[in-house]
Length: 314
Image (cartoon, rainbow, N blue to C red; front, side, top):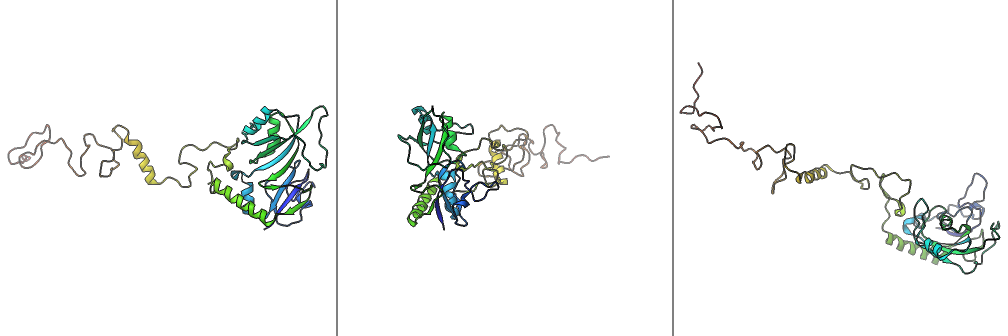
């Protein structure tokens, strides 16, 4: 496994190819078959980790595991305490709120390398530096956050990823992680994975969103039928039980299901009028006492002649 730490210069793509001829990682790193962990914007600078360890790459990139990233942002103006507190609580970016961040106003400008292109700022407006530590990965998140509170970012440098720091690396320089750094990073990621729970790939059509953040443009969950977040469809038995539980609270009437009697099974057939409690195979109630000769009499029927026989015809 290879683990490479690079200080990405300004205006360099965090990829190895570009059809328009812009500078990419290939212009600085000559190690084959390694890929960047996450992204760093074209106009941002600083720390990028590259590796061929796919499992570690996933753990570091997946927002669910909340890997912290620390930035130094040079902003236009001097943020007020109210603006800093707003950044700490979370900012409304129209597409959703950001998670709480650790934000500190740096007393002095940090000692950094000169950027390849000087920062363009207005002479009449002072600038200041803010340290922002986040664990999300929204597109251009830090820039959007500072702009939302009224202090646009002029320069953005990522100085730390988890416990890895850019330190003395100059723009375009890279080094391999030591065995101790790899072991510490692996242990840290394993602990965060355990804290976040086992990662499971969401089922097709489910309402799972990485990091628990539902995109603003996501379609609403389907209504009716079974729960799309479950992997199995309802069985015939579960459907029958559900129907029985719904019918149990209704008054018995034409077409209703007879409640399941204690100790027995429901036949599932509509209850006949006056037939509640009748055992299967029993004759209908309401017949009169047996007539002479053993034939039961019905209401309104005249008893036959003695001997139980009807008079013959013609």
